[in-house]
Image (cartoon, rainbow, N blue to C red; front, top):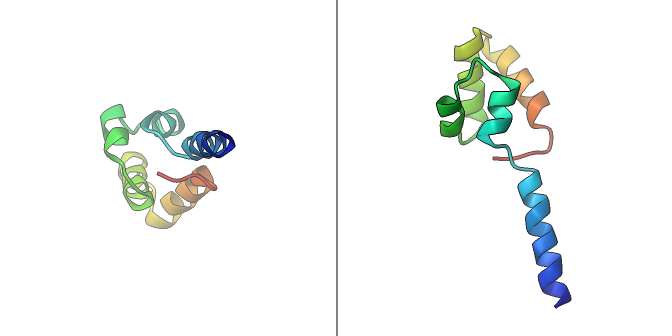
Length: 73
């Protein structure tokens, strides 16, 4: 029973560390909800931020790294 409870807790913690389309849209409103839903990794998020905000790659990458922290897709 304890092992199952530990697994459930691990799953909940993993989900809390995942980036969602809602998180992306909340941070970058110029990224549409449909564009945010299509983003599946850091590179595609950075590319979309570049496109939507006109940032160069270095600035977009820095913004995305700061946003991501220890979270994942």
